[in-house]
Length: 150
Image (cartoon, helix red, strand yellow):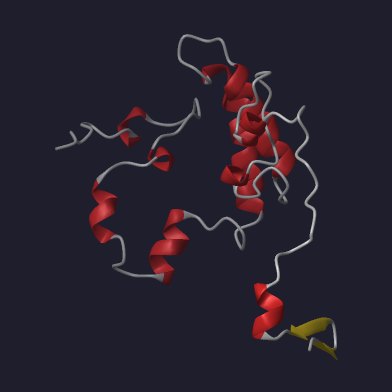
């Protein structure tokens, strides 16, 4: 005999072994034949960006979502020889938004101070923050030699 217990927002249903052995009569909705299952990826077959893709980790809908979308769209549709080289302004705007929200987007230095020694061996290789796009930056700031991957 089936019993149902209502506990707040939850509904707990207890069934007997015999009830479990009876085949289900539940009819599932048929899948939409027009639905293209390949549309679940980052880039849709139409070439458009799927902003709902879980692979974006919510970046498109977060506090800097509009800046992220603008920069990512520019990069995706970039026709330049060095893809995205025409998108520096958009990526700079996105980085500026990140800097205004350090609680959501901690800088590398913030991570190092929070976890000293955790990634010390990774600091040997340069990151994008080691390079400057500012015209006023001194050329002595650039690394003299980039490490070669082994």
